[in-house]
Length: 412
Image (tube, rainbow, N blue to C red; front, side, top):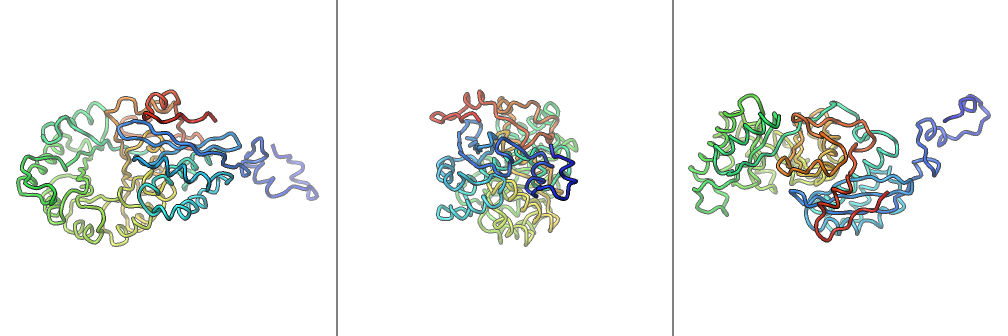
């Protein structure tokens, strides 16, 4: 505790560093968390419905932060190559370390792809670590809280995704039995009418088939749930425009990624051609890439994937840029509870959040990966008040579900 008498003594030798550390309770065995240093970075990969790459950052203060990188082989090796740039650094300098990693890894393409996703995993771990060191929940580190809970939308998969009735039945089950009021289905499914899927062109019967899926799902759930539909970058510009116009008579929450992700000029034309809301963003990296979607208003909804496109602070920056154009944010997410909670923490801290995706409702053991229970209830994720992300890895579950050949993390 701070010596109050000493504080009132004008002759006392009390430095500003003493005051900042002691008055805020920021103490540890080294004499202040602001002196903490990173001692190690470790990864392991869990075999979920995607290969989840978990990242842990260790410090000499005995505090460890956990993050998650977007799935895909190679990220663990990239993270290993970044360790020398982190050892001995102060984990509270999140922005500086992030930019340092981007610069040092520029030769490996750090503006996009696996490298920025690997950096994202470290950045999430630093937020968890910093929150624990200063005893604040992660949302406070990215601006504070707009909401106590975040809406979760469930990415749904029917038994036969080509059958409109199968999709409608699954929509009914997820809404009435699981309690979600926001769901998503795929539209890039076989219709039986394809002649050449490689050319991305949709024939009339193919469009009719997709419209039938939308019609049956929307009619089934009615006003009990918002329903989005994902195209996974599958169609030509003309086909996307035709499909979107055919869906204008239905209450579609959004149509996601109808064309390939590279050409944002074309994306703008597709979005401007229809009143069906268009969502894009999971394949676009950092604020620099998202800027070319947001400034020309080439999307109605922006959908960044936080562990993929740059991490927590970068996603906050994307959300701020989107807010300048009154564009809402619906975070794409295929993560374990670690990456999902990181997305939820940022979603709680931005005004323009619509929802965060949940992609593992059929897995069965998704929540087992952490010690906390009931992370998602009635389609909502409550934001914890514990320091950092507010979730703790269950090491037994991690070990049980690790990808073959991976090694378990060291204990703190």
